[in-house]
Length: 124
Figure 1 (tube, rainbow, N blue to C red):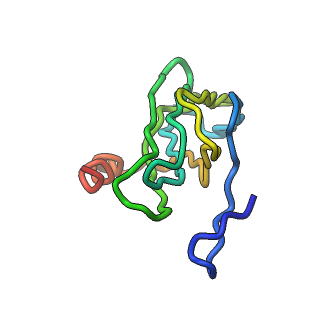
Figure 2 (cartoon, helix red, strand yellow; figure 1 turned 180 degrees about the vertical axis):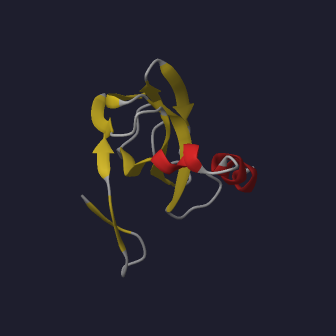
Figure 3 (cartoon, rainbow, N blue to C red; figure 1 turned 30 degrees about the horizontal axis):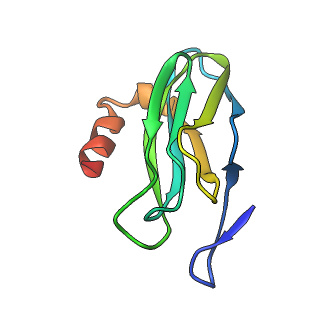
């Protein structure tokens, strides 16, 4: 669905108002980190439980900013082959949780350093 951000730019998102699943394929022969981007805004989106291969996290997409913005986090590791990302709302809101991107970093294992460490440091 297209979500207008500022009247000019549109972000496309998959909306989750109810539990749902996204299936992703890791074509590498090794496990690879999975990152998810989602919309955030003050008191707008529901908290979500996200599960990937038995790794569960709870994401709170509410922020102190009263404008839409995207955040990207690591949600776990994809094993080789098919993987299911399960999403379940923890709280109820009028708006749906909006996934704007799902990425498998297959090249991360090939770097001489862990690029996710750099990403983590910039987020905190």
